[in-house]
Image (cartoon, rainbow, N blue to C red):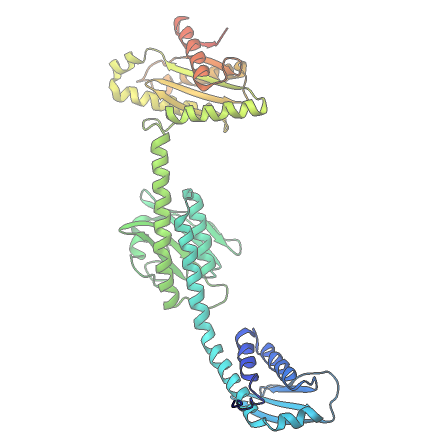
Length: 444
């Protein structure tokens, strides 16, 4: 049986040095780990590394205190860095036999670390872009309200580019308005900008760093980057960024990254708008902008359940326009529709923040009044009647407007939505037969 060749005294050190280079987070940690590998290999703590860079005194790595018997075993240089290996007595004799390969191994290690440091900026930039794209993917995959999505987009973009301030211009009719902004210091409010002017100053495509002549006078004077957020041919917003907090200027790389992220942000904002539009179409009465019957019934169910859990009363006010047919006959359906919109405005104005008003259909409206008794609901009904009676002064063409109202209270007049609505409807029917322009309470 043939025995294998004896292992080199350095057989374990290359892998230990490579491991140190892989996991060290600084040059100081690198040499600490290399020294530890030498200590383990030569079984002596009396080993030192002396590192000099040409700037100031060399750094000594190893046991504290004087080492009069320490001798330099090997020294090597790589660029501006010089490293010397020293040891005492027995360890020095063993290490001297392998000084040349040891110096070569450490020289390669330092040179390799220099290459890695040169590449670190590029690696960090690539890693950063990947993290940014992952965050955008999460943004696109999440369903948020329009306002929440605006906040996420603004916060994300400001953080990505380390901007001292950021503003999101959103189009509405003929102008852009800043609905969301972020800043590391206090900033003055951004004024609205005409839509045509800003669209001209910020054309579609890759953003151009710096303040262009077209942008001057439209946005903040220290604007450093204007980013169009376009979903296809649809301009969703314009993002404006101030100077970077690290003092670096926006360059081509930042401009290209901004374009990539802007496409995803624009799609996310457009998706949020579409979701809001769909939700609005499903829950809103198209004529008045109030809740429709379906949404009202769902909201009433929620309020009754909440009232039952917390032992709270909820009142329902049902409203019907008196002689509405004659309005349509006199003013036409356009005039009747206008009257319904005016009534909707009155209901919104008289309702509290926690109240819910909506249109059941035709000329019939409903108000859900949480934590309100029937007698308190009658006060609300009286305010509505008073406001409608004054409408003739502002809109004389409509004439005198009156309504009949029925009030029901839960749980007194019903626990379920259908039962409470039926109770309020009976009260309304009673008000109609009592001569109209009056308020009746269920069971009274």
